[in-house]
Length: 466
Image 1 (cartoon, rainbow, N blue to C red):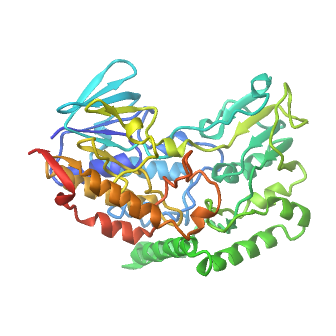
Image 2: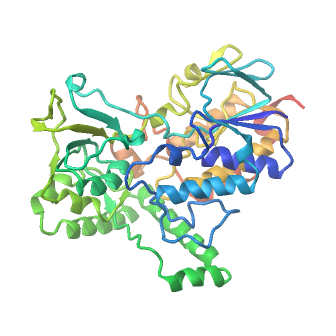
Image 3: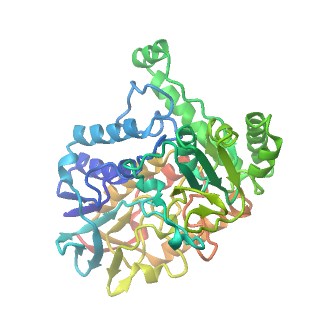
């Protein structure tokens, strides 16, 4: 069976490793970047790091006892991905600098790239993820600005921020990491906030030498730490699922931390305070962002930004950095996927959905990694990616399949109902599409998703070929 994987990040690599471990070797991985690494190759802004501890933000079958700190910066994560790919012979399967624009299924998949090249496949795995297309809002007057402009996910390292007046649009996960870094170099930093965030502390000092030695030498200690972090993530999900009970604990912990961080700045504290339920939006982990806002050279603005030739809301700036995230609910688009003359975009006219976030009715042997409703708010996405890779491998071993429409419809109804009463429903967020449906996040726990995808059920599918 010929398999093409689009995307060479954690998801695509996980799928390729799983297939090769079970005897499926005709694999091609295509990626629009110039190498493997996915989001960790593309996002190289100052301070880029993961806020999930590395013991869990790593493959279960490729654990490391040599992580120097609890959470890894971007360079260490990228080095890990490349090392694992090399260890499993995956790096040689990657064809870089290929952007697929169309995938069409007749009796097999035909993929077409921007340069006209084509690939044929019996099965297509789309592992582009949810966070790969930048979102840049259309600010009033932005086209008139005469200074320098870039998005945080497309950081311009040629532009020196030292001594510059800089405007940052957005206070999400990326801004929380790079604002403390550039605040030390910029002459003046103006940060534009649309809504506040709930914060938790992030203590990430390097491990003492003795601790690193214990992790390397004591049998089971690495596994224990991974298990501990796993259950910590599950506890955060529980707080989000039960906002009236457990969620109050998360709210209290976060509020206490934030008050302490800005204990000497009561007016600033009022302005950054979120007006929505704890966990409705992504909870951010940082012990440096709020103190950075209190620096003398940093100004927080909570009014909507309006741009002129040399200023934003009257603040003269040399540079604007958009920290406005990604088009998460677009998933793989603008890639156009068609089967039997029907476009996936049309099939998703009422909102993206997929059975277990993996398969879509009407699209034979199309499998999604990190698809609709498989994001996590309280754990590691790698748990989901490994589960999806195993599920897809089992499906491929059954031949060319298509999920039954009634199965996918029932799955989607059940999934959406499970959001009722949770914190996710209590505000507007990037988890929702234009219709208001929550289409990015899984409504349950990591362990639950593992169990749901552990055993492939062929009765949920129609078999089209051996």
